[in-house]
Length: 338
Image (cartoon, rainbow, N blue to C red):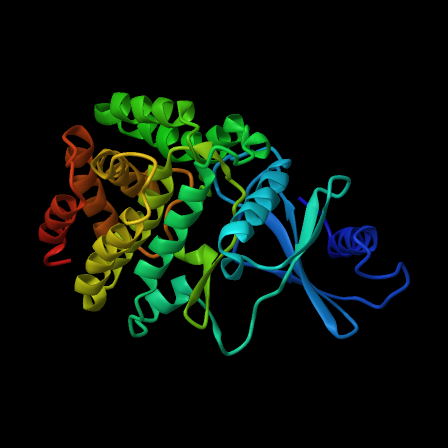
């Protein structure tokens, strides 16, 4: 972690100078940005220009010990470049990366037409079809990565994915739930071995901005070649948990799960749709449980609702559904009264 504001400012300056975005003596306005746990991020203003800069942290900002290799910053940058070839409006503009500084500079997105999807969901803003839009874009990126000429070399980093996702979400959770530990361990191993699709690894409403009606994906620090089901399940899990947290929006949010899946599945050209749907159903209750008892618990559920998630998830892990509509039907019944 960058230890002091002065050290962070110096690192930002070195990065921008190396990338040719400012001169050594230029005045810089540097504002650290909050909200993430895995990186030091800042807004840097120089003259009339502004940039967002990002440096990966070795120890994430969570209560548990959670270390991860800082070279993941490079995989993130390559994910953004790869996505830009497919959906250029759905990633920030990039200004370069430094191996020496372990960071990169990109477009800073703000303004009246920019909204964080998580904020829109928690504020119960009107639904504008965001879930389906995200599903389509994610599906297009996944599909493009299965082409024969796609360069997978920057994403041969399954050890990073294990450190960032499999251990803190599935394996740590398994240590707290022995009754389903074998199932969690089995799926973690299966995910570790897969390398068919370029996975973002953190497809979450907190990492998706909407610029007008276009989703813009951020924070691909966990990018790797893996199993597409992980990205889908990871995002749908957030919608399910928010449906529990927001009873007044519950019907809509659970419908969003199926809208996302229907839009996404239209892009699935690399395998049988029923096969990936089954794997999503395997993983979803595991991720639900992980956001209660893993290393990165959600901040908005009270104790009663956390216990409900445990009560719902464990049976669904032990005997998973094969269709998302059936899984959502079961969840909806359990949510009644909460």
